[in-house]
Image (cartoon, rainbow, N blue to C red; front, side):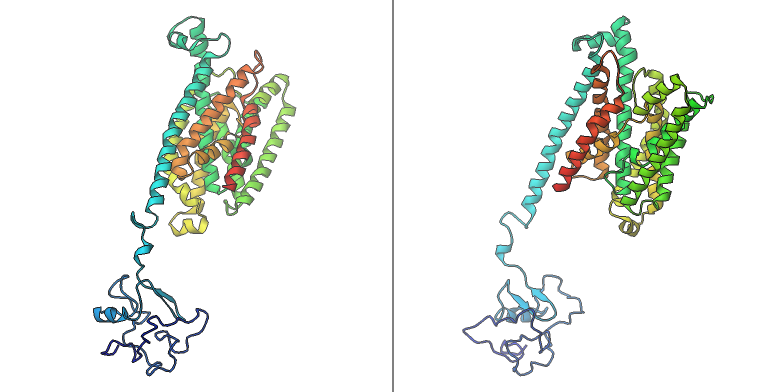
Length: 446
């Protein structure tokens, strides 16, 4: 920069204060520091002492101009370049500080949209919780009042505390069945979300991974083979069968390196386990065949407080592990390479996720049988209700949706063909699969 304010000895034309910038695709033969509009200027091929080296960090910070870091150089460059102008050369596009028009009147760009998005999220959370609570109250009231005998809602407190016929029906039959449906649906919904997030596949459900079939095989085999297995040990047999089916799927699919490979391998493993169940049904007598058939469809019929209390030890072990595993699911969703870069051991994380899913599914299958497709529907409902959150936020909503799905499906299972009860698993499959497919397709188009 010379003493008279010119740059490299070149005086801009008075009528043209803005020298023409070269086309971005044209090579700059005079070096990155000289405009191509003056190729014959004195000193055009010499390096500009006021132009900083592109490899040298700017000591003035990101707010300094592109012509130098000293106040004198910045003042002299103002005579050549207006604020907001763009100087194009062969190496990069250098933008000076944006003009006043680039900043919104209310603050930085994007501040208003962020506030509107936050308000929409808050308003969505405000209506979702009351609606979920109202649905839960409605399903609970219908499950306790509907049936034979039918009770008015005002008579429920007396039936719950009384000793008459209504007290026995409500307190000993309907209430444990309702609580078991809520607990079973919550476990299946949470397990479905864990499997889908850990394997990065929206179709990864217990029925397609060999987990439910393995648990059912572990319970049905001792029954058909007349093995003396106490009722307390049945969850252990279901746990072993579910773990074997899920682990076989992961081993055959390479621990989930490809989501499609996991799904196809899981379908093959589930088909093999179902074939083994069919062999057991052929070997069973007529009475055992009826029991196995109803059990394999998933049923809450004739379930009592003893069946419900048998689930609590397993839930006490599964719920803390589920809470600890939830943050890792969001990292696994990014992909194996990104998860490893963030310090997650992918294979161990997937094994831990499978173990937690097995711990949630096996006790439910041991008591109720494989209630189908709840683990597929509930996670998709949770993602639709809360699209702004991650796996940690989806987990309680998935459990709630699963609980409402099973408790709601048990109503037509009891009442549709009364006095004959139908398996609840048939209703969850009949209603859950179409609803899940619709949610999956509409969610993919959004």
